Image (cartoon, rainbow, N blue to C red; front, side, top):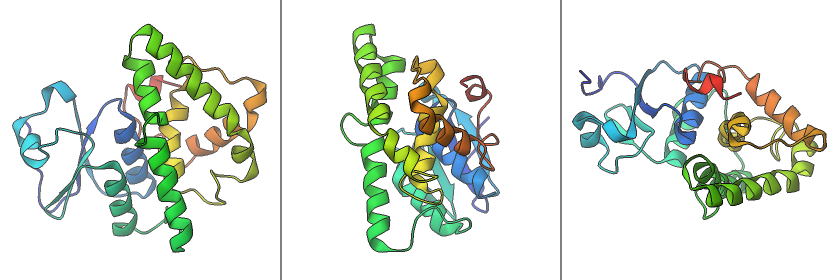
Length: 209
């Protein structure tokens, strides 16, 4: 039976195949954070978790008696709470740019996370349209993937953490980019080779790529 988290531990309640949960698991593994990771199903969230997060969303992070359940909030909290290796720049202008990119990829209307959800869970017409849009978005951004080792950065940031789960799922999304997208595929391989990426995958996610 699931019990409330230990106040002395860092506990992450995570969905098995969800993009947001994948991103947070990647961060925690990359930073070698000591943690308890508990996998749950959205349709079967126990009362203990609902008491912590009335919004009924995942991931949900419990740390130092505090409960966090927004992706951007969780990511920035973890980056400040466990500062090595850093995943956001110190410069306020650069940091604001990264925050805006994260918003555009994960939360804005028509964002990549929304497109992925539609492809996997929408009806055929909606899924086909979302697949076409995401494929087009990726192709349009090829120059940015080719310009620097990471997305508009020489070092990995939270933006890359958010993109990695999408790129890991290209196969199950039915997206085949081809040779013209070699910069994207090289970028993806660079992320997948990062320390902690494989460790952060759930059993189900390992079969996605």
